[in-house]
Amino acid sequence: MAFDLTIKIGGEGGEGVISAGDFLTESAARAGYYVVNFKSFPAEIKGGYAQSTVRVSDKKLYTTGDGFDILCCFNGEAYEFNKKHLRPGTVLVYDSSDFEPEEHEGVVMYPVPLSHLAKDIMKAYITKNVIALGVLCGLFDIPVQSIKDSIKAKFLRKGQEIIELNYKALETGINYVRENIKKVDG
Image (cartoon, rainbow, N blue to C red):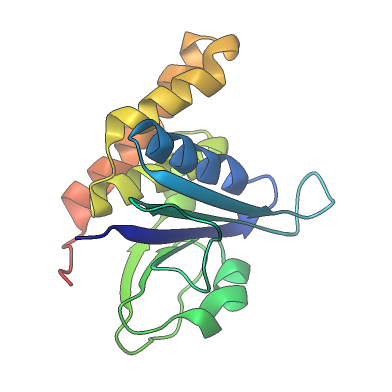
């Protein structure tokens, strides 16, 4: 059976949207999949809408395709920008500490308080993107070790403390799913 999955991550520039997409891309490539990643970010260093669309397949890819299977919104702006593309069967993971989306028929919705987990549990808002990756790992059985390998490669020069902080953020997302979310099949 062919495997083809597109994950779109959207949020504010500076929230780690692009890094999250890069971690997914590297992890899928390390696992032997074909991957295409399209990034879009504002001219400002922080602020403005940023997005990363990652398509993973066991067949050769040439584009990210026309839509997405999973949408992960770090804020309401990302949701507003992408809600018209939600269709039955799509999964929406969103920061419930930032906004509440409207209901969409046939769309599976997972509220996760990403900002709360980053600020209040991790005490480091910059970990929001890696917490979101942990949530995606927990929901969709993305291999955790491949994400950890990508984190280690990216932060090796910054030291073991930064690597461990990101590992803890990843586990925070995974544990949130394990303890608070009932996965929907289909």
